[in-house]
Every structure is written in C-alpha cells, then in structure tokens.
Image 1 (cartoon, rainbow, N blue to C red):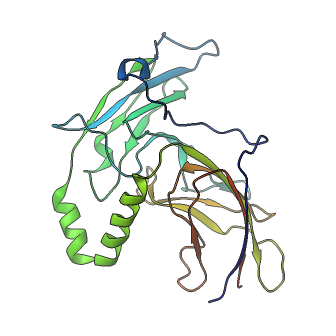
Image 2 (image 1 turned 30 degrees about the vertical axis):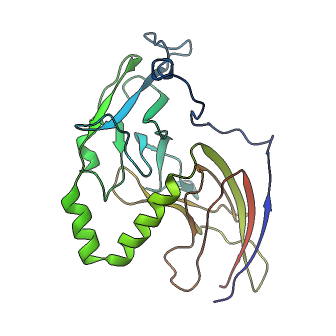
Length: 250
C-alpha cells in the first residue's frame, strides 16, 4: 500500500509546552526534591524511584505512572479508554507527578517483561511524599511470548534496543488526511507502541475533527497511526520535536 507522508522536523517548537524528562547527569540524591504536605494550589506531588526487585536497576522499556480514571482521550464529548493522565519514568528510574488529594496512582511497566501492573496501585494519596517502588521481573511471560508470538518478540527486542539510544521527551504533532480527497480524517487511532493503560489495553489517542493529534512521548519510541488496519497504517519515530502530515487511503 502506497503512503504519502510529508514531515517537517522542527528543532524547537516554542508554541508547544511539554514536560521534559530528567536527563542531566546529576547525583541521585538531587533527583528527589524536598516535599511538603501540599502545594499552594492544594495539589500534592508524588515522586520517587522505580527499581527492579533484587537490583538497583530501573525497568527497561516504557514505564508510566498513571492517575487512575483521568483520561486524556476524548471524542464527541465521550470519554474513551485511550490513555490516563500520566508521566514517564526516566531512564534512571525517577518520576515526579502532581495530582489531586485522594487520587489513585497506578505504575505500568512493560507488560511482557514485568508482572501485572495491578500489583502497583496506590490509593487515597493525601499528601506529598516520596514513593519508591520495586517491581518484579516475569521471565516466564517473556519466554512464552518468544515461543507463542515470535514476531511480537522480535519487535519487542527492537523496541528495547531503540529505548537505549535516547532519553527525554519530545513533542509529536500532526494531521492525518485522506489520500483520495485530501480532507482530514477524524477519529484515527494514534498510539505509542508497547504502552498500556490502566484497563490493560493499548494507550491511544484519536484525531480530532480537523484530523489533528498531539503527543508527548519518549524519544525514538515507535508511533503507529491507524495500527489496526494491516494494509493502511503508518509507523514512525522521532528523536526531536516533530510535525508530520500523513496521507492514508480510505
């Protein structure tokens, strides 16, 4: 299937604001900021480090800290189970998220490498605090993936190699058009591969009525546009802030 894509790579997009992951080489101690009971606006800040149990190593792949049931994917005024409000855990294992009192947090590591994310649920948080978390590897699940679905296993290996190339977040925005009519396409799924939500389904966004999407994602992570269509999808990654125009066949 032929695709036409025109990409304009923007070195810096001053009109976008996005959260940046911590990438500078500073000591572990200074990664964790001083915490107070609550912020001036009444919100609270939860921060800490995520490590694999039995080691001091951070998890590999994409790991997110999610606010349960606070969704960012909406269409026609309806809420879809696309993606929770979340922050990414950086390559050293650190995270920092500001939430409302009483919110529930759910840590979601890579679903093929670690045990069920429902083991990492933290409810009724009432004050700012440091919350360090240990997660468990699941080697049996990874071996099962290798034996049962080798294609997915190979894609996972590539994804993990790409994950080692860079850290930090980039802004990716764009518009999806019909190749035939050149009109924008609404409700096209755009997702970051190997990323789940708190309902254990793929975390996705929908293009709006102007065919637009806007994501803040880790560098070099694969983004899939219209992924459920085997012959009419497009996949790409970005290592800097990027704007893309994508043309799909109807």
